[in-house]
Image (cartoon, rainbow over all chains, first blue to last red):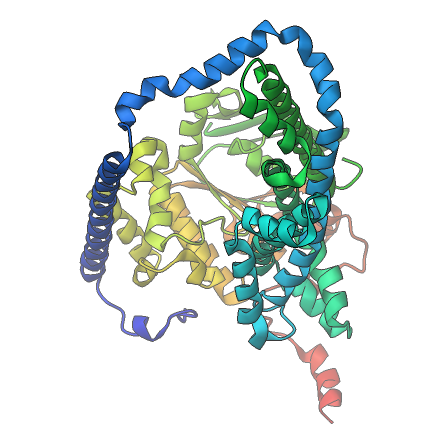
Length: 294
Length: 273
């Protein structure tokens, strides 16, 4: 039969021994490159570790046994005051709700912006392919700035409170989720889009009906994962004056004396929140992938 | 008796995809299974390869019940019972020779596999098999870069690398054009005749079944409704297998390149005017 997919390189059929030597040569070359890379990698890791060890105030190995000291102190103190924990849960619940609200609103706003940015910056889907680099660089910039820096600047301008936190986290979210969304959309099958284009659908219609159903499960799980990260980010922003559970955590850890039960209560609340979000994410994803009946 | 299938069933929910089928094959022949989609052909092959578990029954190959095997013994059976899929099921991003070498995975350790270390003898053998199938030139290319017909031959090469006693082919030519379909079927027939390996192929066209098989089994709704030689496969029998009425005309859906097309010529001419 004719060599249907043979390129110009395969034009002249070679004898089997030639092909075998060529393939073995190629294999040997690949293995050699792999070996060299492995050696370089190990050498860099070792030298990097030495540099880090040298620049450290204390030694890494000499400090290692002390690693457990602080958590042990926190846990033992919390265990002594374990009777307080239920009351502390109730006490911190309002600030947890505030932290969660900040996380949820910023994930929603950032996620919506990310959808738009992703579709505008995906090859094959973007309505203005020439502007793809512009949207990409915008997302890079949004990811590059630490949200704590944005929050500090905004607190300076707008004053403390949840609004600067929402803006700071949403900006970072739009950059991070936009990149992930765009990578998912890049792998989406373009055939449905072509089908919709063939009936005269506009860009928005093609995206909403051709791409969204395909990417929804992955987008949703990325967004919920981002919600988890944002809960933590919003707690951290409490340290710099945004309120929420982070503020309580800062006070509890700062004063040290006899307040470690509060620290444990806050960490437990955060842990439970993450677990609940994870379970919700699993359920929602399963429903999306298999349909509501499953 | 080489292969004995005894009352094998597979139930999905309440529906029996395969309903207590039994047959025997004495020698390493070319067996074709035909029937419309959903007749249970694929499910049966998948049960033989142990990709799908059977609900009930026995499949005895050389006297051993392969449906009862577990763990390592099951994987060892799978390595002796090669499967060829409609959509090739190659690893698209790996090169052709690696895909063929996957046929030896059952006797290779996971660690050696992770570092992509194959014995030199196996590599040379893989290239020989590719050469036998006429695609040795493609060995260093990625599998996804090949045409459908070439990919299916890579899949056959992977099967041969397993050195199997039996080759199962699940609609091997359903995704191929007539030319490539013929090449793939000729290859399977050659393996059957030259190597003496048993081939069981699910086929969706009657002319292919007639041309290549020594024995044809017709399935309908999970049951065997025909079991005989290709010559006995008349249009009447085909209508029964496919549950079709008198309007069924196999020439209309045949994928063979037709020699007789007078009937269409007049109409075609009228369109040209």
